[in-house]
Length: 472
Length: 99
Image (cartoon, rainbow over all chains, first blue to last red):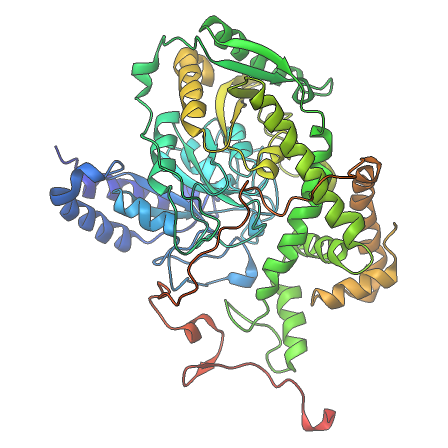
């Protein structure tokens, strides 16, 4: 039976436009277009009659990180340099979600060009964590994770370059998915680090996250790095998994993800989750990923290097406003980029330009690419040894307080358990596994390339077994 | 491999960023504060290790070398801050006084 799509989208659009979620409140939403949302809801309603079976997300309201191109709202990447910019085309992921019956109701706040781990780097002000507004929602997809946590939508799109979906999902107590590199087209995702970027999903449940992930999946002629692999069937609903055995599944526990410095509350919640997995019949196996400690140095060479190249296109000629247009061309370039980019983006462009410059390329960039190979080989070796999924904490601490982390490198360390999956290209998911001092803790599963089905299966089983304990 | 103030000026020039002279020592200190954490990579033996150029096992797939329509719903000049007659307008590269 056709759900009342118009009403449900209208209600979601109202929530998205509520002052509580705008700049005077939690600052989650950067833009809405109620008229377009209702028009699209009507189109979904019309299409459902002839194509309902192919619409697994019929009537689902979604929020979209502001670095994913949409036609009916601006795409600013949280930056002054793209203030007011509206893309002339939309991301393939958005096209696929619309075909699946979903309707975009909001664009969400983010760290500028996805560079940050707290959503404090947005040119439009920081997003506050709905569970405790004195704390950050994580980042860079903090607006999307917060939109789900606040109940504006049940599904929101984010993007991952080093953990930017999983870390905010953990901080906000929602599910966060980073698919295998190549699973979802990057066409229409504003490029940050092209060998690392993937569109990801924040959602209330593993089942909803999986449904949205698969709806966006598949090879795309507009992204040569999208993979020609079959798109799996969605997982069964949570109810069907409750009490289900994990016999035959081997869960690896990598020692390097449980250092002495790990927050004691995070460790305790992970211990509880591991015992539940064991109780469901999974084999728990201690493993080692020996190059893990090198992941942050590697990531913060490779990602800025790729960013310095990708962001060269923002110079005032195309895309958004320009500064000093009465001067000469070079003056316009310099003024536009200096006025348009914020401090963290400028810092990363400088680092990236430096590590790619003559005399430093081999010492930094080429060296980092070689160590990246070793990190990927660590995962390949563990999975070849019979491990089906790895389980780790998603972040080393619960959500930190706004303004409490001021040293750039200290902020980078909050990605320490997530960047490895981006460097290796494997899929990962964060799910809530309890709370510490009323702040959520996330547990992360990592799987082999394109083995999202096993990852979703184990994550959904743990989610079902934990029940209310996951958010208590 | 410390970043010098000369390096900062050179990188900023390459990156098309204007850094006020008074801020250059601060920027150099910030970059050095970050890059010193990268020095640990020099201790890793990567002899015989192929650098990753991507994450796919098969490398970058090729696609047919053919023209395909781009799914634009407006023209390219609409992307620009200024345009006229279908062309993007930019400031002059040089003036007669410069020549």
